[in-house]
Image (spheres, helix red, strand yellow):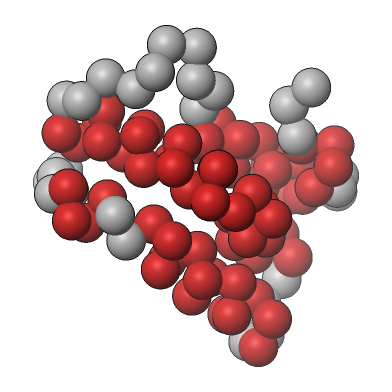
Length: 94
């Protein structure tokens, strides 16, 4: 089953980033599983805006600005690098 977000749901990205940040700091979680939350925390509003644009494109059909890098790809790359024993820095695109 595929779920579709509404515009108001997409706008919850900053809230989810804050919850992820709190969780990785205050709950027992491996770095491997919390690296995405760390990346969202460090990326701040610029990354959240790009993420909301990407979610809007996928779920609402609103095209994101041309040439905008994929936040999903960055988050997945960070997880894969951590799972392979890398670091968050090695997962960041050049």
